[in-house]
Length: 142
Image (cartoon, rainbow, N blue to C red; front, side, top):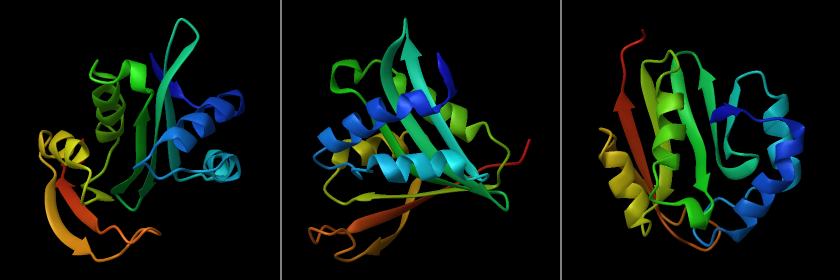
């Protein structure tokens, strides 16, 4: 089940973020701030009270900016990330944007499979010097 995140979800979200070698590694305080933003869409995937993953996006002026999608390692490749992304893409917007590490080939393949296209590159964008690929997807507003 995909549902809006609540404060009780934050520790599991922070733990997952901290474990991600190539992820954004959001801290608890940052995740809490997202819950307070009116333009933030913060979702969690759960099953039988088990936390499976989460997604955060900003919806501003008909643009959806995907900030992070993270799935617990034991639940990967089971459609959880796709379900989270589908919920985000069903929000009313005209264009979706995201950035990902150039070395994250599985994320690149995941997003290209749903019509995202690479539209730019930010050199040495991440703290460790990794480049960021900018991706975009056009969407009609329902």
